[in-house]
Image 1 (cartoon, rainbow, N blue to C red):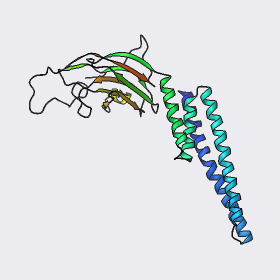
Image 2: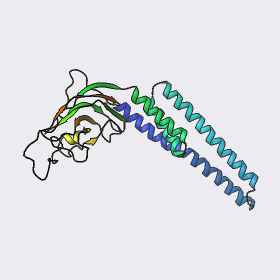
Image 3: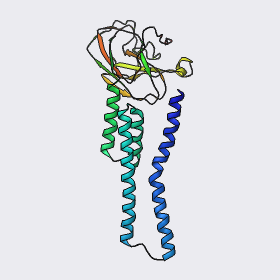
Image 4: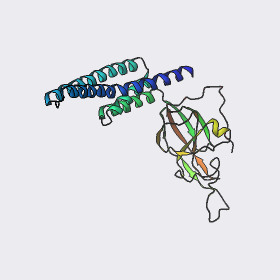
Length: 251
């Protein structure tokens, strides 16, 4: 944790430094131009403007070259988070750069694939913990397979199925029968805030806002019977090891 915090501090400082380099340099160039202008009291010629532009372009080229060399070094050493961080800094300087956007997307995909784990999931299961998710770390869940949903509930009235308790009732904001997820954090466990289920369906990528445990469940009405299994593939999620206890969700 201390190492992660140190990297976060260094990254924040580096971000400020990198994003300020071009602005400071431009300000310096303009200040020098203004100083020269006040001394000479003559407008800057087009050739002088071109010289300033050339200096700025040279600075940008050097900055990008050095940054990309550092990014390549991080990738080769497996430090993908650091590589992505620098790519995002470059993208802030050049928001329309499609090459950088693709590079970030490819890097995300590479990171997720390197941590893929698949397992069988019973569609009739209650909320089931499948692993830990981490704040600001991209995660992916994919599900394949078919199952049967048999409605056996009785004594319904005009209000239909209950949706008040997300732990045992039908979740109204998720399609009926769809695979859904829920992240349980320390705040949820302490009762300060209830967890919020979200649709996963056949595939879903998400970036958690907090550390927590990811739970999965099929959004079936109370009393319904689900027959069949899904093949679940998770990426960017730390799977529980044998003997490790998972936190329970109060129902």
